[in-house]
Length: 362
Ligand code: ADP
Ligand code: MG
Image 1 (cartoon, helix red, strand yellow):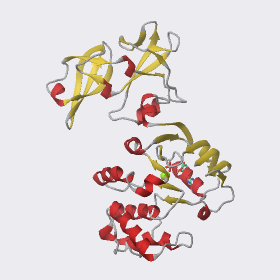
Image 2 (image 1 turned 60 degrees about the vertical axis):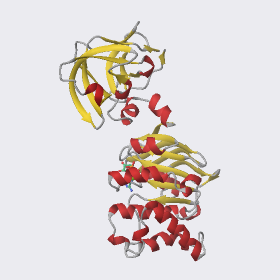
Image 3 (image 1 turned 135 degrees about the horizontal axis):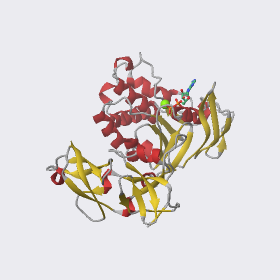
Image 4 (image 1 turned 120 degrees about the horizontal axis):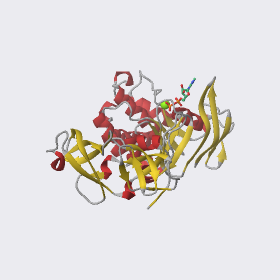
């Protein structure tokens, strides 16, 4: 549905997009995740035709978009810095796309469509108010509504929930995918929030410095991250990455802890072993690790426990149910268990690039 190939876009000496490849399938909800400055907005603008790439092609529905005006591309984009009419009412702002010759609807139908979208976005009570008098969060919902009211081939949404407070964001995140227009329309959703990407994306593309580093389902990204930086981007508390060396019997980490992971790499290779905090348990089946409690921190119903492993200064964090961890005090000895199949393995990080994932043998 949306195919970007070899897209390069520079602003002076800044390379915003660098040989970017992206494919969003028909009807899919695709999340593009990356830090600020990674090239997310530039990607959307390039698809919408608001920026011309220096090289590469944009294909929508099998048609090359070179030379096609933004208005004729049939995509609806919601800007991060939304261009609303501040003196007009929220209703008028929502209605304006439906007044364009392309999308003109009979008044009654337009009213009905606007009413339904406003209801879903929780702005029904604000429709008479001038947009200039609304809060940032309310304006952001009007801007989103403006995109969703009109029929489009694809929605391009640029961090549409970023100005909402945490509670509303969580609520809207849950509702967004249930909106009929979103369910039926290919959607490319940009965010810098990995929780949002995991919650919403049928697939996720991770963008870094103008390139797509990895594309996959949430399971693929979670269990087979391309490199340590992708692994660090998903999951809180963050994944533990223990430095060590490949040996015949597994990876021996600094401090003498043996981790039962067989690498497809020669003995002596410096690696990082990844253990997700929720994959380490205080009681349970698996390979046993011993250590002492370093610090505990209550996170609602669970506790983050940081444990010093072996003889060195290696530390790992785990998340345990409060009932299991409530009595732990610093320096208490603890036994941990990890399932070998949950261990990830990476090359050691280098100054020029994060360590890539290494295949393991079970
Ligand atoms: P993101 O949306 O992921 O935060 P952007 O696509 O906005 O990233 O920007 C990517 C890079 O291109 C950044 O380094 C940014 O400073 C630069 N950039 C974006 N737009 C412009 C512009 N109009 N002029 C100059 N530099 C720009
Ligand atoms: Mg942006």
